[in-house]
Image (cartoon, rainbow, N blue to C red; front, side, top):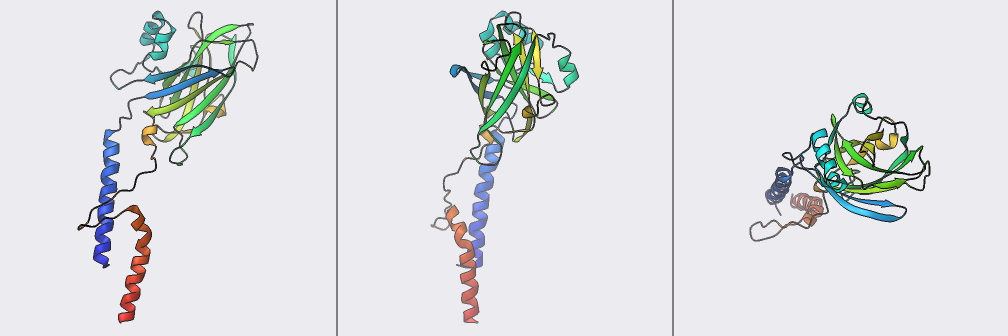
Length: 260
Protein backbone atom coordinates (compact mmCIF):
# COMPACT_ATOMS: atom_id res chain seq x y z
CA UNK A 1 0.00 0.00 0.00
CA UNK A 2 1.42 3.38 -1.02
CA UNK A 3 1.82 6.44 1.21
CA UNK A 4 -0.89 8.20 -0.81
CA UNK A 5 -3.39 5.41 -0.19
CA UNK A 6 -2.75 5.40 3.56
CA UNK A 7 -3.05 9.19 3.75
CA UNK A 8 -6.31 9.05 1.80
CA UNK A 9 -7.76 6.47 4.19
CA UNK A 10 -6.77 8.49 7.29
CA UNK A 11 -8.24 11.67 5.80
CA UNK A 12 -11.53 9.90 5.11
CA UNK A 13 -11.70 8.58 8.65
CA UNK A 14 -11.04 12.02 10.13
CA UNK A 15 -13.84 13.52 8.04
CA UNK A 16 -16.30 10.88 9.29
CA UNK A 17 -15.33 11.44 12.93
CA UNK A 18 -15.51 15.22 12.52
CA UNK A 19 -18.99 15.07 11.00
CA UNK A 20 -20.19 12.78 13.80
CA UNK A 21 -18.89 15.11 16.53
CA UNK A 22 -20.24 18.26 14.90
CA UNK A 23 -23.67 16.68 14.44
CA UNK A 24 -23.78 15.85 18.16
CA UNK A 25 -22.74 19.34 19.22
CA UNK A 26 -25.29 21.11 17.03
CA UNK A 27 -28.19 19.02 18.33
CA UNK A 28 -27.32 19.45 22.02
CA UNK A 29 -29.30 22.07 23.93
CA UNK A 30 -27.28 22.94 27.05
CA UNK A 31 -30.05 25.33 28.18
CA UNK A 32 -32.46 22.46 28.76
CA UNK A 33 -32.34 20.73 32.13
CA UNK A 34 -33.68 17.21 32.52
CA UNK A 35 -32.81 15.30 35.69
CA UNK A 36 -34.35 12.05 36.94
CA UNK A 37 -34.11 11.51 40.70
CA UNK A 38 -34.92 8.56 42.96
CA UNK A 39 -35.50 9.14 46.69
CA UNK A 40 -34.86 6.62 49.46
CA UNK A 41 -35.30 6.88 53.24
CA UNK A 42 -35.13 4.12 55.86
CA UNK A 43 -34.24 1.73 53.01
CA UNK A 44 -37.56 2.38 51.25
CA UNK A 45 -38.03 4.15 47.95
CA UNK A 46 -40.20 7.27 48.25
CA UNK A 47 -40.55 7.84 44.53
CA UNK A 48 -38.96 8.64 41.17
CA UNK A 49 -39.28 12.18 39.81
CA UNK A 50 -38.14 14.20 36.79
CA UNK A 51 -37.23 17.89 36.80
CA UNK A 52 -37.33 19.41 33.34
CA UNK A 53 -37.09 22.87 31.83
CA UNK A 54 -36.31 24.66 28.60
CA UNK A 55 -35.00 28.16 27.87
CA UNK A 56 -38.60 29.32 27.32
CA UNK A 57 -40.12 27.68 30.42
CA UNK A 58 -37.34 28.18 32.95
CA UNK A 59 -38.55 29.71 36.20
CA UNK A 60 -36.91 32.76 37.72
CA UNK A 61 -37.98 32.08 41.28
CA UNK A 62 -40.57 33.37 43.71
CA UNK A 63 -43.62 33.82 41.46
CA UNK A 64 -43.63 30.26 40.11
CA UNK A 65 -42.81 28.96 43.60
CA UNK A 66 -45.88 30.68 45.08
CA UNK A 67 -48.06 29.37 42.26
CA UNK A 68 -46.77 25.85 42.79
CA UNK A 69 -47.35 26.11 46.54
CA UNK A 70 -51.02 26.92 45.94
CA UNK A 71 -51.41 23.75 43.86
CA UNK A 72 -49.96 21.33 46.41
CA UNK A 73 -46.57 19.74 46.96
CA UNK A 74 -46.74 17.60 43.82
CA UNK A 75 -46.92 20.80 41.78
CA UNK A 76 -43.67 22.02 43.36
CA UNK A 77 -41.96 18.80 42.38
CA UNK A 78 -43.07 18.97 38.75
CA UNK A 79 -42.60 22.75 38.34
CA UNK A 80 -39.78 24.17 36.21
CA UNK A 81 -36.44 24.51 38.02
CA UNK A 82 -35.94 27.50 40.30
CA UNK A 83 -32.77 29.58 40.32
CA UNK A 84 -30.74 30.93 43.22
CA UNK A 85 -27.88 33.47 43.20
CA UNK A 86 -24.38 32.20 43.82
CA UNK A 87 -23.84 34.96 46.39
CA UNK A 88 -24.17 33.24 49.77
CA UNK A 89 -24.99 36.34 51.83
CA UNK A 90 -27.95 37.09 49.60
CA UNK A 91 -29.25 33.55 49.91
CA UNK A 92 -28.69 33.15 53.65
CA UNK A 93 -30.56 36.37 54.41
CA UNK A 94 -33.87 34.59 53.69
CA UNK A 95 -33.23 31.59 55.97
CA UNK A 96 -35.53 32.43 58.85
CA UNK A 97 -35.22 29.63 61.43
CA UNK A 98 -32.65 28.33 63.88
CA UNK A 99 -34.81 25.31 64.70
CA UNK A 100 -33.61 23.25 61.73
CA UNK A 101 -30.16 22.53 60.33
CA UNK A 102 -28.37 20.15 57.99
CA UNK A 103 -26.09 18.10 60.23
CA UNK A 104 -24.13 16.49 57.41
CA UNK A 105 -24.24 15.65 53.72
CA UNK A 106 -22.26 13.42 51.39
CA UNK A 107 -22.05 12.91 47.62
CA UNK A 108 -21.12 9.61 45.97
CA UNK A 109 -20.29 9.32 42.28
CA UNK A 110 -22.07 6.41 40.61
CA UNK A 111 -21.99 6.35 36.80
CA UNK A 112 -19.28 7.51 34.39
CA UNK A 113 -19.95 5.75 31.08
CA UNK A 114 -16.92 7.09 29.20
CA UNK A 115 -14.51 6.95 32.18
CA UNK A 116 -13.44 10.59 31.73
CA UNK A 117 -13.85 11.49 35.43
CA UNK A 118 -17.21 13.26 34.94
CA UNK A 119 -20.27 11.47 36.27
CA UNK A 120 -23.81 11.47 34.86
CA UNK A 121 -25.32 9.84 37.96
CA UNK A 122 -24.57 10.80 41.55
CA UNK A 123 -26.19 10.20 44.95
CA UNK A 124 -26.43 12.85 47.65
CA UNK A 125 -27.48 11.93 51.17
CA UNK A 126 -28.15 14.47 53.90
CA UNK A 127 -29.20 14.34 57.54
CA UNK A 128 -31.58 17.13 58.59
CA UNK A 129 -31.97 17.76 62.34
CA UNK A 130 -34.44 19.82 64.36
CA UNK A 131 -35.11 20.95 67.90
CA UNK A 132 -38.55 19.34 67.63
CA UNK A 133 -39.30 15.68 68.33
CA UNK A 134 -40.80 15.25 64.87
CA UNK A 135 -41.14 17.51 61.87
CA UNK A 136 -42.08 17.18 58.21
CA UNK A 137 -39.79 18.91 55.73
CA UNK A 138 -38.74 18.82 52.09
CA UNK A 139 -35.57 19.79 50.27
CA UNK A 140 -34.58 21.52 47.06
CA UNK A 141 -31.28 20.53 45.42
CA UNK A 142 -29.35 22.85 43.09
CA UNK A 143 -26.14 22.79 41.04
CA UNK A 144 -24.00 25.75 39.94
CA UNK A 145 -21.12 26.09 37.49
CA UNK A 146 -21.47 29.84 36.91
CA UNK A 147 -23.09 32.67 38.84
CA UNK A 148 -26.45 30.95 39.55
CA UNK A 149 -27.69 27.72 41.06
CA UNK A 150 -30.09 25.70 38.89
CA UNK A 151 -32.57 23.47 40.71
CA UNK A 152 -32.29 19.77 39.87
CA UNK A 153 -34.82 18.25 42.28
CA UNK A 154 -37.57 19.01 44.77
CA UNK A 155 -37.94 16.13 47.23
CA UNK A 156 -41.06 14.59 48.64
CA UNK A 157 -42.21 15.56 52.12
CA UNK A 158 -40.23 13.44 54.58
CA UNK A 159 -40.24 13.03 58.34
CA UNK A 160 -37.25 13.91 60.53
CA UNK A 161 -36.85 13.03 64.21
CA UNK A 162 -34.88 15.40 66.43
CA UNK A 163 -31.15 14.90 65.93
CA UNK A 164 -31.42 11.26 64.82
CA UNK A 165 -29.11 10.10 62.04
CA UNK A 166 -31.51 7.30 61.07
CA UNK A 167 -33.73 9.66 59.05
CA UNK A 168 -31.11 10.50 56.38
CA UNK A 169 -32.58 11.03 52.91
CA UNK A 170 -30.81 9.63 49.84
CA UNK A 171 -31.37 11.17 46.40
CA UNK A 172 -29.87 9.48 43.34
CA UNK A 173 -29.92 11.83 40.34
CA UNK A 174 -29.21 11.07 36.69
CA UNK A 175 -28.46 14.13 34.55
CA UNK A 176 -30.02 13.56 31.14
CA UNK A 177 -29.36 17.00 29.61
CA UNK A 178 -28.33 20.52 30.58
CA UNK A 179 -25.02 20.01 32.39
CA UNK A 180 -21.78 20.32 30.37
CA UNK A 181 -18.71 18.54 31.74
CA UNK A 182 -17.40 20.69 34.59
CA UNK A 183 -16.86 21.05 38.35
CA UNK A 184 -20.13 21.98 40.07
CA UNK A 185 -21.18 23.20 43.51
CA UNK A 186 -24.33 21.86 45.15
CA UNK A 187 -26.81 23.84 47.23
CA UNK A 188 -29.32 22.13 49.53
CA UNK A 189 -32.31 24.09 50.87
CA UNK A 190 -34.62 22.70 53.56
CA UNK A 191 -38.24 23.89 53.82
CA UNK A 192 -40.78 23.48 56.60
CA UNK A 193 -43.52 21.22 55.27
CA UNK A 194 -46.21 23.09 57.22
CA UNK A 195 -45.67 26.61 55.86
CA UNK A 196 -43.10 26.30 53.02
CA UNK A 197 -40.63 28.54 54.86
CA UNK A 198 -36.93 28.14 54.06
CA UNK A 199 -35.43 26.95 57.37
CA UNK A 200 -31.92 25.64 56.57
CA UNK A 201 -29.34 25.76 53.84
CA UNK A 202 -25.95 24.23 53.00
CA UNK A 203 -23.55 24.69 50.08
CA UNK A 204 -19.93 24.15 49.06
CA UNK A 205 -18.73 26.84 51.45
CA UNK A 206 -20.29 25.28 54.54
CA UNK A 207 -19.66 21.66 53.50
CA UNK A 208 -16.67 20.62 51.37
CA UNK A 209 -18.55 17.52 50.21
CA UNK A 210 -20.84 19.78 48.16
CA UNK A 211 -18.02 21.46 46.23
CA UNK A 212 -16.04 20.51 43.10
CA UNK A 213 -18.48 17.84 41.93
CA UNK A 214 -17.30 16.44 38.58
CA UNK A 215 -20.56 16.14 36.64
CA UNK A 216 -21.78 15.91 33.06
CA UNK A 217 -25.08 15.06 31.38
CA UNK A 218 -25.72 11.71 29.74
CA UNK A 219 -25.82 13.73 26.53
CA UNK A 220 -22.10 14.48 27.06
CA UNK A 221 -21.14 10.90 27.88
CA UNK A 222 -19.23 9.43 24.94
CA UNK A 223 -20.35 5.80 25.07
CA UNK A 224 -18.23 3.19 23.29
CA UNK A 225 -19.01 3.64 19.60
CA UNK A 226 -19.79 0.93 17.08
CA UNK A 227 -17.19 0.28 14.41
CA UNK A 228 -17.53 2.86 11.61
CA UNK A 229 -16.99 1.58 8.08
CA UNK A 230 -15.71 3.99 5.44
CA UNK A 231 -16.11 2.85 1.83
CA UNK A 232 -13.05 3.67 -0.26
CA UNK A 233 -12.74 2.51 -3.89
CA UNK A 234 -14.97 -0.52 -3.31
CA UNK A 235 -13.13 -1.51 -0.11
CA UNK A 236 -13.74 -0.89 3.57
CA UNK A 237 -11.85 0.60 6.50
CA UNK A 238 -12.52 0.37 10.23
CA UNK A 239 -10.96 1.66 13.42
CA UNK A 240 -9.07 -1.64 13.64
CA UNK A 241 -7.00 -0.52 10.64
CA UNK A 242 -5.47 2.20 12.81
CA UNK A 243 -3.62 -0.53 14.67
CA UNK A 244 -2.11 -1.71 11.38
CA UNK A 245 -0.91 1.68 10.13
CA UNK A 246 2.50 1.57 11.91
CA UNK A 247 3.04 -1.96 10.51
CA UNK A 248 2.12 -0.81 6.99
CA UNK A 249 4.55 2.11 7.13
CA UNK A 250 7.30 -0.13 8.46
CA UNK A 251 6.71 -2.71 5.74
CA UNK A 252 6.68 -0.03 3.02
CA UNK A 253 9.98 1.47 4.14
CA UNK A 254 11.56 -1.98 4.58
CA UNK A 255 10.58 -3.04 1.05
CA UNK A 256 11.91 0.21 -0.36
CA UNK A 257 15.26 -0.21 1.39
CA UNK A 258 15.61 -3.78 0.18
CA UNK A 259 14.98 -2.72 -3.41
CA UNK A 260 17.59 0.03 -3.05
